[in-house]
Image (tube, rainbow over all chains, first blue to last red; front, top):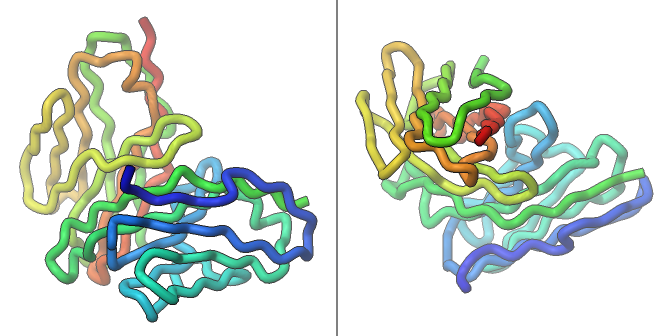
Length: 117
Length: 109
């Protein structure tokens, strides 16, 4: 079944540890995104990539890094986790952005619930 | 600043109609999205409006007024499975999405 796969689905992490959340899509979408979702707040964009080889900073990029070596994979790394990074993380992709005439519709992974103690 | 406002929670009865409102303020505007998110699951796309007016898709309809910075999602013939959060998101001039916090819709029998 085509879609986006995230791993792990859930993780408890000690503060100061390094963590990489994995995201893989098989829809050959150009654009990929990482969001965090916290209770009472809207989805907040962490980083994005419009195409393989390029990345950009979103609304809340501090403490996170990404890479886009190929079309399918877009891992998110927390170099040194802090408790404020406790959240649900969603990876998403779209076939193309609205700016290039695409629908802009986002397809989301099932999320990774991260708890930093 | 950029902002999206939508009610935190709404309650409706199975079989009835409910309207979820969303107001937005963005730097430029390139469309308004609605997504549905069941508890513990990923958001899924419902609708996109960029022109004024009503877009109907089965039991769900979405309305946009650009001059008022206002949209609503209308759900008819409510079913228990419609219990979910409904996320409103506006796309700004840089084609970035600004998300509301979501409206939790509770359906009662």
